[in-house]
Amino acid sequence: MTILAACILGVLVLALATCTLAVLAIEAASTDAELHVTQDFRRTIWEEREALRLLRARYARGEVTPEEYRRLAYELVEGEAA
Image 1 (spheres, helix red, strand yellow):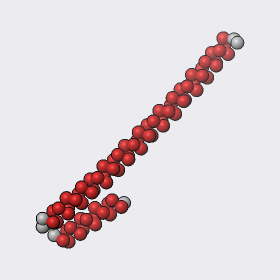
Image 2 (cartoon, one colour):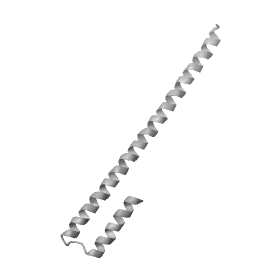
Image 3 (cartoon, one colour):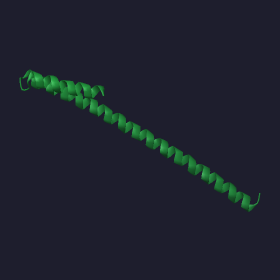
Image 4 (cartoon, helix red, strand yellow):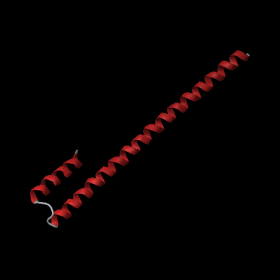
């Protein structure tokens, strides 16, 4: 094998390795982004449930009118469904 052929083969191997690493990096980044979205979604659901729990407690203590309670509870429940 000539030196030129060996150099070309070496360049091709390095290019293939670089492309493989780039694809793996992109895949890892997208998986990480999906994980953050899932965690944010769980946190949002938890916050909405906590807000509904606090609203029920305030309503039970008489701090919130029935109309206000119905309106806010509807908004929180619809927010969970959306």
